Image 1 (cartoon, rainbow, N blue to C red):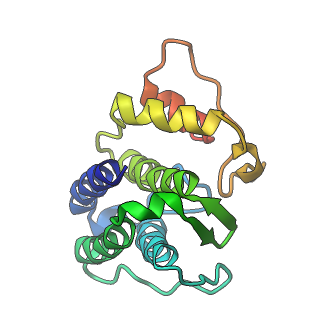
Image 2: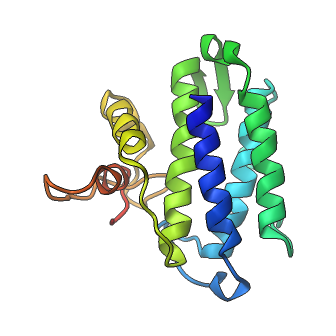
Amino acid sequence: MIDLIKQGIDRNAAIVANVTPEHYGQPTPCKGFDVKMLLNHIVGGNHMLAAVGQGKTVDAGAEMPDLVGSDPLGAYKQSAEAALAAWSDPSMMGRSHTFPFGELPGPAAFGTVLLETWVHGWDLAKATGQDATIPAPIAEALLAGLQAGGFDAFRSPEGNPFGPAVDVSADATPSDKLVAFVGRTP
């Protein structure tokens, strides 16, 4: 699992490296987020994942400051390294982890880290005109985990954090099926 998280982090670093200030005001597939807000959410999410991985309590209601500043790639890399370091211990899989939305057993917690990493990378790539494709084996594994149950509790009509599933054709790519399942239009 840690290798899949690392792959997502590396992929997202390449995506963030191609984001320019001209992209900041553009809309994203994340309802209510422009590119700058999404970048800030991704960096803040990495800090939250690092804190959760370290067993710290996270205040989901706290206002998020501008974490991106004038160096989005530097901010992303620093936050991603912190998250990766926190989740690199193999014993993490056998423990429960307390997220702002509740406690999850190790496998579900790792699934949450993977989902956050890969889907928000897709969001950012899509919003900035980059290749948004999530590799088929990763998309298929994430989708299977989500379809196993419990994901509907995170859906809302407003799309936060996830909207209703979007219909796609049976022959859609695994990447498109995954993002459609979490309420994005591929």
